[in-house]
Amino acid sequence: MKERSVIDYLRAIGPAAIIAASIIGPGTVTTMSVLGASYRYEAIWIIVIAVILAYFYQEASIRLTIAKRKSLMQAIREQYGKHIALLVFLAGFAGALAFEAGNFIGAALGMQYLAPFISVSAWASILAIFALIACILGIYGIFENVNRALIAIMSFAFIITAIISRPSPGTIVSEGFSFKIPGGNYWLVLAAFATTIPPTVPLGISLFTLKKYSRTLNNEHPRKLIGLSLFDLRTNTIVMGLITISIIICAGTVIHPLGIQIKSAADMAIQLTPLLGPLAGALFALGLWAAGWSSGLVHIEAHPSFLSDALGIPDDPKAPRTLALKTFIALFPIAIIYLAGSSPVALIITAQALNGIVIPIVAFVLWRVTSNKEYLGEYANDTAHNVILGLLFVISTILAIRTFLSLLKII
Image (tube, rainbow, N blue to C red; front, side):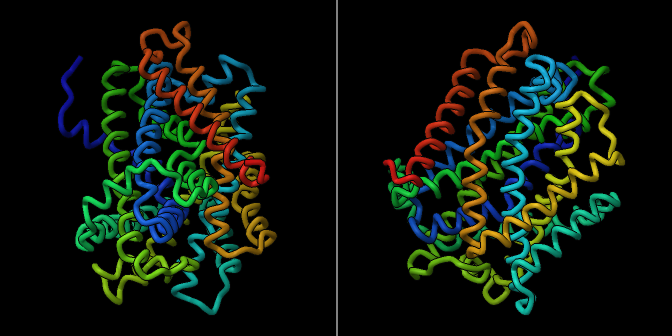
């Protein structure tokens, strides 16, 4: 097997970067800002665990995709049939609809900061329709480089601000790893967990990995491509984790002492003022818009492919079913936003938490598919991977049940 070069590693960056950019959306920014503003650093330990589990959640999917030269959804259909594949699709689809509501309302919060004479609901509708048109016409790629640049600038502004705001390292460690549930708020904890490990993540990383290596899968040794893909995954998981924790530290250091309850983009933008001063609001608004709109595009584009793989039919971007599904994914969340009638920040956190309730379904099926040695051979999970994926299933299940019972006031 030919030795990998630095150029090979750099060229490998891609699928995990797309997933990381979709994760660092308005849901992450808003949920982490609220956690930091309300409970300072108490949620850091939760995010550390979630980020580690997110890595293995995607690693198993990458390993299967490259070893079998097919998507995770195709593998699920082959092993368990269409009915289970459709169940996984519907679980991810339900989570995606909630996630999309958070994406578009987050993007709308950013736009309302820049143009306050238009309501958040109206901005969300405009952005969703624009995203749908861009996907149908195939011109969404035109906006991606600009959006990624804005997301990167906003994201690294959090990291720099987390450093220059000079939080106490001792306090970060003592509070951040106290292993307490912040304020006993399981709903907010589930939102934090789900925004870091959305249920569609293993399906998405599989789809984008397959597309990236479609021309080389038959010519390269699987171990080489897995190694390159895991470099991409490790790099972007570390960056995602740093950004996520930095948002908590920024909000905990800058906003928490002010006693501000976050209700708008302007409230969240306060945490960047140590670095950007009066420019904090504008940059934060643009970054929030870019993060929400880009993440929204990813979900609109990916789900028709998930459905085709679940049913075992060709993935046709021009088929009526594809256009209908894209339209539903883009517009249904807008109905949720109008019907909910709640505050934008509360809606985003609720969307993330609802997303978390379906994680156990996808986590369990992923675990079982990738542990099948008859199917994957040497690429099946070893004992350590089985323990970690089983732990992900158990944690997500307990958290979802605990949150649900809390809402019913049973416990």
